[in-house]
Length: 137
Image: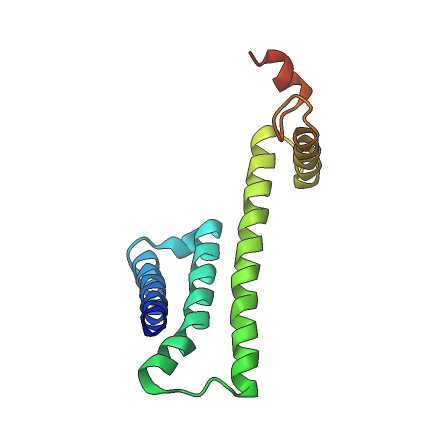
């Protein structure tokens, strides 16, 4: 059981260090904050660092994580990760729609219809239009 606990500690340290390293490199060297997707990546890794930070501090210093303040802090940091992830989903939908000349709403409906057809075993790929299917081999 001690081996599993130690491995869990190592994984938390590894993930937190990787997230901090990414933030330093991406902000400092790559100037990732200049683009919309770059800002979303920064928010995602900042949220991961905020979520993992108290766990690392607890393991290093014995910080108590049983307070109401920590519960709210943890909920907010996990919400930040969720918001950044949903932001990336929106970004991909918007950019893909723009690439084929649809609004994001039309593209989302088109993609949903294609996925439902695929789940029912109907021909076609998710997101493909009838024009694409006619020209496909």
